[in-house]
Structures are given as C-alpha cells and as structure tokens.
Length: 308
Length: 308
Image (cartoon, rainbow over all chains, first blue to last red; front, side, top):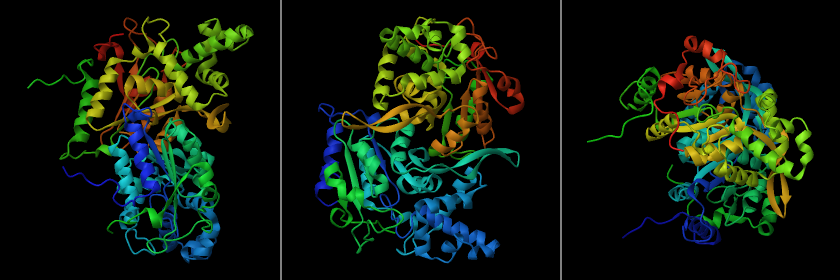
C-alpha cells in the first residue's frame, strides 16, 4: 500500500533522523522510552522558527499597520519618536528599538482596546497583510517543513505549543489560522489587563503595562506554569530560546532540542548574530557542547515556503 | 436505536435544561448562535465545583500529609503555629488561616522541591489518599453529574478548563487522573520558580513566594492570558468565582454561568456563607439579578458521587 511520505520537505540528514528517532522511541509501547500521549508535549518559538521574522517579526508588522491608522487621524505622530521610526519605515531605527522596545511600543499603541476587539483586529489584519519583501501573504510566510512537522507530531499524539516573546494576541491569530494551534496553546508576551464596563458589557481592557515578557528563563517558567510538564521536544532559533532548549534537553529519556539557523540567502534570508532584534550567537556557538541539534535552513530543508 | 441517556445524574429542571439549550444552540451549524469548536471553551472552578471541598480543599489535605512527613523528622513542628493547626487536626484553627493562609503555608512547605518531583508526589499521594469524613478514596470524591457534564461537553467539541484558587500542581494531578483533563488545561495558584542545577540536571525549583493567586478578578485575567477567548460556559460555587461567572455571562450570544449551592446535608454537606475557606454569599444573593443559574445539589442532582 502507498503511504504518504514522512516530512517530505526535510532532506535526509541528522536533523530529520533525530526527529524520526524521537517520535519512534516515545511512541513504542513496548520500548524502554514509551511516553503516554498526554505527556507528549512539543514547544516551538514563533518568529523565525515557524515563520519568517525578517526584517520584522509579525507583532512589529501589526504595530506598523496600527500606527498608520492612528497617524491618519493624528499626523503629528509622524514626527514623534519612536512612532516616526515605523511611520517613516526607517528600518535601522526600528531595529534600534530592540525586541523589547517594540513590545513596549505595542503596549502603548494597543492600550485601551478590549481583548475581544484586539483578537478581531489581529485576525482581520492577518487576513489581508503581506510580507514587506517576500511579496506573499503574511499567512503564507510560515515554513512548509514546520507545518509538516506539526502535522507529524500531532499524528503521533503530541500536543504542540508556541512559546513566544512576541505578542500573544497577534501570535494567537496566526496560530489558529496558519498552524491550526488553538489560542490556549500559545504562551506569549502580554499586557496587563483590567476589567472595565464597556457599553454595559464587562470587558478585559489592555493596559499599557507589561504583564510578562516571555524570553530566556521566563520561557521555561512559563512552560511550567502553563503546561505543567517538561516537553519532549523544543524548537527555537535564537539566543532568546536557549534556556528553553537546555531545559528540554536536560529531561530524562529521549528529548530533542533543535535550533534553526537562517543560512539561506537564496530562498529566505541569511542572518544570525547580526540581527539586532533576535540574535543567534551564544546558542549556535554552544550547540554541540549542549547537545542541541542545529537545523540548517539551506541544507536540511528541501522546500522553505509552500504555495503563496 | 437505543441512545445513551444524556446527563443521567441531573434531574430535569432549569439547570439541566439550560445546559442542553446552550450546547444545542452553539452546535447548530445552521442556527444563529453557531460557534466553531475551537471557540467552545468551558471553565470550571475546582474545589466545591468538581469535587468535595469540605471540610478542607484538596491542596490543604495534601499539605496535611506533607506536614506529617516533615513532623516525623522534626517533632517540634507539632508545637509551632501554624503547622500545629494541621498536625493537631484543629479544624477551626485551620479554617482560621483562610484560603490564602493555607496557600501560603503550602508555599513554605513545598519550597525547594523541583516541579517534576512535586508532580510525582502529588500523583502518588492522590493514589492513596482518602477523604477524612466521607470514607471514600479522595479520587472518587468528585461529583458524578460533573463527570457526565465534562463528557457531554467534550462530545460536543468543547475544551474544558479548570480555573482554581487551589494549588495548580495538586489540581493537575487530580485533573489528569479523575477528569481526564490534561495539565495545560488547569490554571491555578502557583509558586514562583527558579531554574537550578540539581545533580547536574536543570530543574525548576519551587520558591516560597507566590507567583499568582487565582481568585476573583485574577480568574478572569488568567482566562484571558491562558485561554485567549471568552468561555461560553462557567461553573463555580463561591464568591471567589463571581467575577469569572459575570465575565462569561456578559459575552455576546448564548452563555451560561452556573453556581453550585451545597445544600445537601444528606448526601454531601450543607454550607454557604458560613464556610470560612470558600464562602458563598454575595454570588448567591445576586444570582438572579446577574443571570446566574443556581444549581441546587439537593434538587438538581439525582446522584452526587459515583461508586467509590
């Protein structure tokens, strides 16, 4: 009988083999490494791991659109730092804000919105947004090999989670639409909220204060708080993910911590330590000694993007 | 063809009818109130809503067992407040600590344990623990009508969550074993953690500080942070749940907020405003005006517990 090929967009190599080996080991009911389905948890970083983050991660693109709307009503924003960096599309200045600076700009820009409204705006924006350089809808800037991996893991009883330093509301909109991952399987950076009466209805309204910023060790603590078990697999692409990768790799039994290296200027982009927003430096240097499996976009992926 | 009866442990009445009506409305693909499965979320309080909380909620019983173990090694604990309240089984004094006082005692008692260990201890304890007064295993002190409701909701595409002021680790052990609810669908009070190297392995270790206490409006904020959509159904049993019930009831379209009243001294216990640990007072008084559906344990439930 003909079977559908497994992970067809992954080239044969150490990364693909490690993935197949992990899944086979934990699903083998008679083997020494069997793990029951409810403990088969996989965690993924988002921007740069599941979809393109260059030149800007998705929450930053969303802030740009929202600022355009605001500036149409208040043109003075165009001359006001840091809004002007976005509104004048001054990429070096936007990068200069850093990831956290952009997140904090988002806190200001989205403050006052009820969460229900915010979710609707994110979904509507995503349905229409295009990548600034790739010339394709943003919703199709996800990586085909990762969509296959998510499907493969789910077919083997895994529950996938996204653990992101990006805005949880924006990533939830994408996760649902693009990866089929429900909102409660997205753990992300978010604003504090307050219950307010809006037109007679109790709403949670976003405040301009950070509730939590999910990077570094906070990724690990968030996994414990939200998921409650140590994942079997972690996939990241930046130093921001190193603590999570190490925590997963340190678990008993078979575990797999993978690190995507954007080394493919032909099909996507080539960058690592030099990308100010999400540098990959220490994690790459220590990958071998820490037992992290590096995934080369250029060598390990047969295809990068699916049809637009 | 014979069909299995629906919610057989629920008596006919307003509460059962409201449950059937909600589920029919949101599942009717051609009706005006259809909700796609990924937005069918239900939230339940834990102690007193899904299982017996009288005379003590489960995390308090667990603290009692742990204190017994500690006191076997350090007998002086028996004379030390507040440990002595537990160790001498002085119920009025334990109640006098209040819910939060007991939680904070738990923070102290469990501090220093790696989370993985803590989860194992909880599961092992639960497998052996018995209810102090009911004379049945603790794992069978859950309410049969609620097990049926969980199964009914799942069969109709709902994802159930527990939102608890109790210790998330303890409730996760029960949720998995008793309700078939995975750990990541339990949102609860928890301790801060720190990554530490324990025998060469990166572990998250519990600290003696509170990370969050999930009651009142914090239940609502936790739902937004963790789940990301406003639930269609909420079920609680105390004033501590009122904000969550109101938030769910305030959503657009059909929503259902239910409030369990422990008015059954015959089969379980009869208490409300007088239970110091988890009083039901304001919520009951305002139920009618706020559109909350009161569930009387005595009248609405045909059976309370399943076989021991």
